Length: 246
Image (cartoon, rainbow, N blue to C red; front, side, top):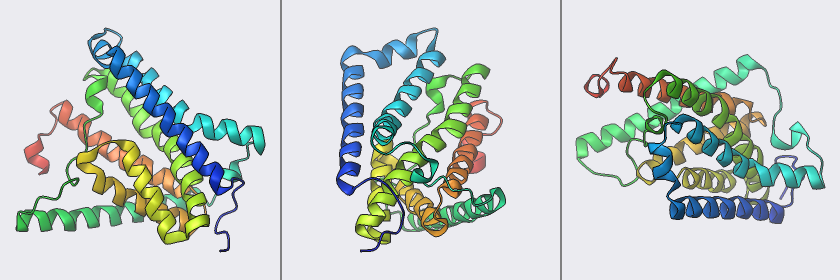
């Protein structure tokens, strides 16, 4: 099978790195649960600082093994992760088109559920991540920086720049996209909304495959998180009510 993307890693290296990330996340989450860190953080006067450190730790776990191994064996280069500049406007237009497609698909499924009364497990509203930061201005500002500005870049480098491009080379575009979108959805650990996250992953994957760059994916991710963040802030601050947008 011809290689769709030019990447330095062999497939077994991809599995090793993915396994290392899963193991580190498992140990970290297990340790935090046993030590009761979650309860301590939520009751601390420094909640925003602790939550920010936890998100930073999550990002280090996600990218640490990948960047460390790549630097050690191949040397870090932007092209390895699909950070190819295809133009800002082109990336934005592509991201908007992809987001419109995502809204259309989820709207069709939502209408189907509404009129049939069928409950689809895993197709519900995502968990409110802003609640852990608090409702004060500092908490919302920090949450915005992390959720809208930092998380999309970290996640796209790992899931699309690394996993998708390696999986596509090994399995072909279709199954490579399905597998990486599945891993993307599982990593979010929001089982009540795993289907929308999986669909989101497939659409973002299609942008990367089409443009051979993760730049549209980053713009898409920023757009998606930014809209969700804005709606959550308006709800938290009671500028709008849930009844107004349902």
